[in-house]
Image 1 (cartoon, rainbow, N blue to C red):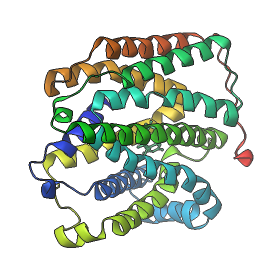
Image 2 (cartoon, protein in one colour):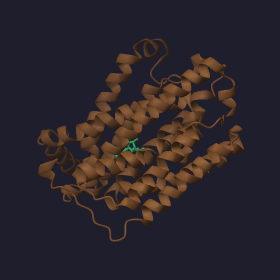
Image 3 (cartoon, rainbow, N blue to C red):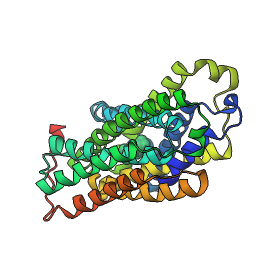
Length: 318
Ligand code: C5P
């Protein structure tokens, strides 16, 4: 995920001319398409490459299960929105600040786990969450900038940072809700395979992302072409993002959402180090203290559980 954020940010700012820049909504569609193809191929191989068996599975789980597809269209829609917000945020924020602010998804994930899964949070866990918030705010208000941000004039820089921060905070909400919702569905019906669930969730995303790119970017798509500006770097971003999405689904299935955000949080430090090395990111004291607080809170939170108790609502309560 660290490499993804850095690659995405670089792909948005590295084009010499703005007209050379790829249309980000088409990249979201391409990523959804790639995930759909990978899941379809996995299901196809699990049926010993039987076309009739695969098409029967698709018929049973898509056409004959509209209720299930409808349930999964909720996180599907929210993830599609989140992926678009991510592109917008990374056009306006440096990748290290983005990563730190996005860690507020630990808070949203915990809150949605409490409300939707009935998870109990101890005082120590809440304490950890507030240290996290403190760390995030510290890092957000630091004067750390990367080289690309310096190219913008002061007014634009302020405005863009605000838009970027807002997008990341919205994405943190959709991330927390969608992750917990997907976990509830997966663990509430363990007999349905993860790959089928991914297909059920991927189909609405695929349709939605195609519609949104045609609605919002009709003019550039018809003038320059759907795959305009797709360099090797853009293709790499799409591949890494699709692989990351499938990994998230695997982690949620075999662990849980809190473990997922905990693991992802290590990426802040790595991201800051890589940004410093490659993009001239200069973390100031405030950013460093903020990052330390974020990391510390993760350690406190993850060690705060004691006996782990997870309550998953049955599927009929989704
Ligand atoms: O940041 P966060 O962990 O919420 O990112 C989740 C990412 O994983 C999203 O890009 C989403 O599209 C992807 N995902 C997926 N398949 C799932 C669950 C999440 O591709 N089953």
